[in-house]
Image (cartoon, rainbow, N blue to C red):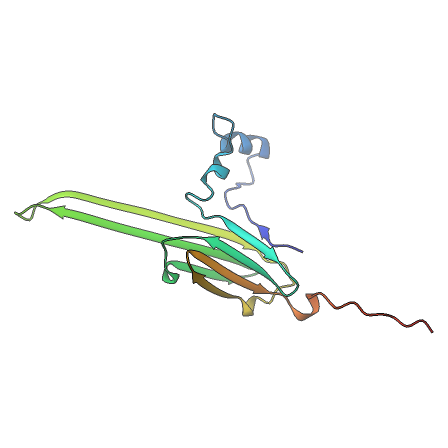
Length: 149
């Protein structure tokens, strides 16, 4: 079983052929995929015997910049940055004002085999790591030999 990425941009009424056409840039590359890693951080998901490990590449942020929520087996990772700079001259008049705003949101559907109450996260060296533990009954059982009677 694996985590399933939800596509929030899919409208439902637009057929996928047209949807693909509008999401592709004129040079033939997929415009959405070209933005992964620039506007939306790249995500790696590893499954092991005990858990799923989600890694989000987000350098330059702090752990306070992230919001991680779980609701109805939906894992949402989001971040929002606002920056404002203002330059004034000696008379106190504004000579230049710059602002920037960036945000991202990644949404994943969790399989029923995870314990959403025990999810934990760490942020170190530009990588947000989220550990999603599996339920005990979903963990791989060791091989056992069956005696023939």
